[in-house]
Length: 92
Image (tube, rainbow, N blue to C red; front, side, top):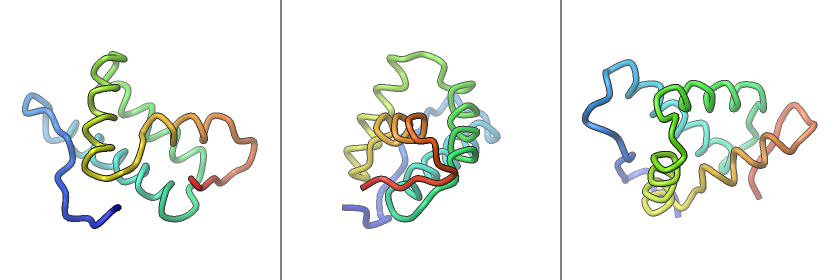
């Protein structure tokens, strides 16, 4: 579904630095679906995202909104990265 013409779900209260961190994580999720991703780099981006979005409810809301606009699941990508023993992974 990814046509790159969608807006990322963002919070108006986030600082410029926080926005960049969250956008970088969204891009990491996109990469996991579109090509191979480095597991360590992906999980590092996720950890940075979690510092900005620590609550499960907010993470689920953003995942739902991101999935609606992109067709990609943050949850599934994180689970796949955590489950693999390889250095790289790709969503199928």
